[in-house]
Length: 263
Image 1 (spheres, rainbow, N blue to C red):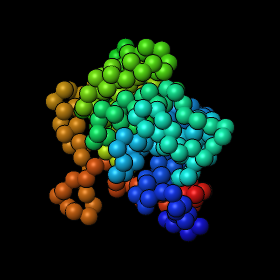
Image 2 (cartoon, one colour; image 1 turned 135 degrees about the vertical axis):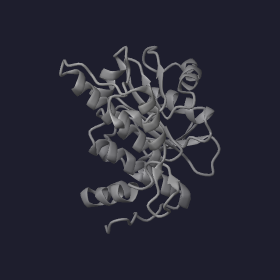
Image 3 (spheres, rainbow, N blue to C red; image 1 turned 45 degrees about the horizontal axis):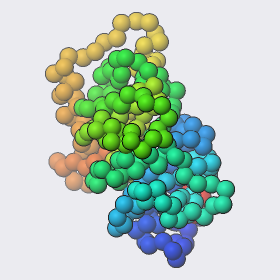
């Protein structure tokens, strides 16, 4: 299939939903490509355009490298499965609880991404949390934290997840892993990619058993202000959200590797 060309859109999906499905399937493949997945566990969700209270999520039991646009489940905030092409797969209960909490409460958030990487889990278990020791870490002016309550299968935890997230773009789930959100799938992927790299670098630095250099607060704030928005290549002097600029290149990379995510 030529790069950038999607498979023919199935009749049951609108053009907007199919585009969302392709982007979300691409996000799953990218998380796999950058070694941020945990076999069939974890989850990424994306709100369905022009529909009230519905989102797309992975079938529980499929590897991220297998996810395609048509394989994604559609569920609503109440947990009803509206589209499932599989007999053997359904939704991950913890995935439903975490993602329905955020989609139900934050209507300007379209994408939610959760990981269990070794470095993310390691930082989640550190009392200090994420430290501003690299430019990548300083990108996030606010990092939220949510205390561990056990496997996230109890619906009453949803209120506390949303409360603790507040207006942050990323949250460290203590003793658990990382969570990133975005107004778009592109932005959410960029957020998780950056915080994962920040965690990986911190663990490497701390393992050297040498004092860490933490910049002054004024420098950290200045850096965050500088990095809050990404310069726009097509409109000098203006800004665009993170994730937009590199997304076409990431899709081209996926097309070269395996374009089946578009099916």
